[in-house]
Image (cartoon, rainbow, N blue to C red; front, side, top):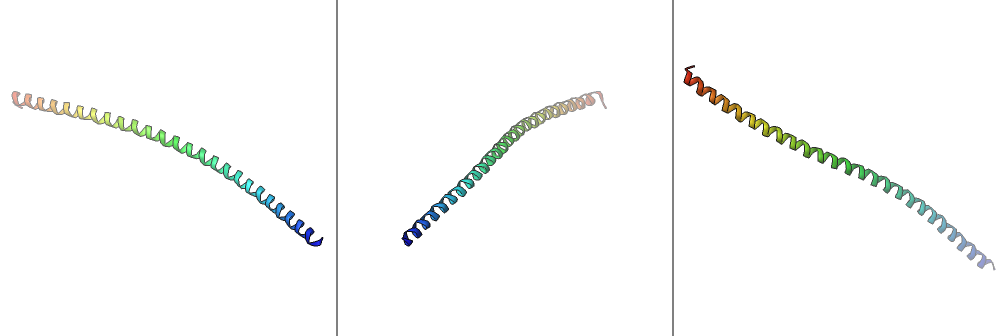
Length: 94
């Protein structure tokens, strides 16, 4: 009977160790799930920030384009006014 008791005890110890190992694995998976959730939240925050920055860059580029177009228009009008003034000065004799 001694060998059977020893075998049963050994099998019970193996069973208990497997249970403890399973519990530890479950705890690890729960921690990993929490980490993944935090990473997902961070990723969403980063994506939102990048999207906002991209929209701001588009608006900034449009503003710069408008300002440059306006400046070109002003420069052209100034050049035209200076040319006309020069023509008048030549007629008047300055």
